[in-house]
Image (cartoon, rainbow, N blue to C red; front, side, top):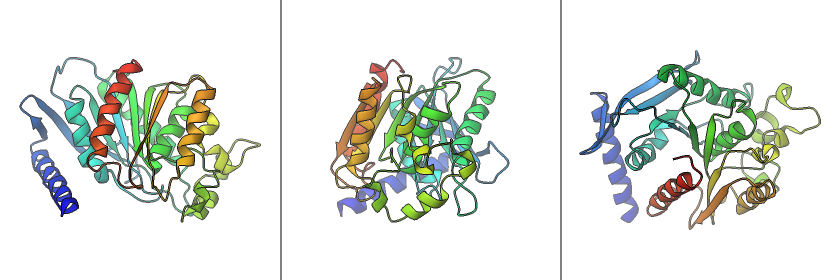
Amino acid sequence: MKNYMIHLVKCLAVAVLIFSCKEKTVKLGKDISFQKEENVHYGNNSEQILDFYLPHQESSKKKDVFMIIHGGGWRGGDKSQLTFFTLSMMKKFPDYIFVNLNYRLATATSSGIPNQTDDIENAIQYVEGKLKYHPKFILLGNSAGAHLSMLYAYHFDAEKRVKAVVNIVGPSDLSDPGFEKYTDYSFVKNYLVNPKAVVSGMSPTSFASPISWVDSASAPTLSYYGNTDQIIPLSQKRRLDSVFTENKVQHESYEFNGGHLDWDKTPHDQFLIDRIAAFLKQSGTL
């Protein structure tokens, strides 16, 4: 019954959001509102779309951007899965711009990497062009979206526009024996990465592992992992923390009591949002 009520409340909140979108305005309280643009194309592929939320608060001020990146095993999922969490984040950070991103999904004939990290780059360039200034970006992703957030920030962000990463149950080392138990690991090993993109001397899984690219200049990162997650083992958290510590990268990591899909359930969601706020303030991003 408790889970049913939580699901019902979330559905009602999303319904209110969708209804308000008809007026292009999302109201989250007396003094918090955002202008919304839905399913905006940032590329020529039908999957390259995003939702864009511009706060009405202090409209003349140049604002930074949260970019939200969904999970789904690199070949599934949709930005709509994170609509409710994006809404909750907007209430906590009313002076930020929010982008909820879709990207090209991987198939056996169309590799996810570098297409998906290219899509993050394309979306960032689109947002910069739209705003006509260069904001700071905070990448927040869950599962595969967290992996892509880290991989882009640590390796593909040549301009260093990402100032922080929020990694929610994201695989950090694709070569971890614990992660090899993932039911779709054969796809990850054989099809996730385009062989032409791999750096000489590296395996595809090593190339696509965020920990391979961490150095002292890597973006501050907050990580959140479930202690009973059957998809992303806690060894992923430990390996990532170890590399961060070795390279003196500012980071924090937390565990919640639950599995892979439990991170946005009460009370884990609010704990995470509060820790994000504290971490960004401490790291100087806020």
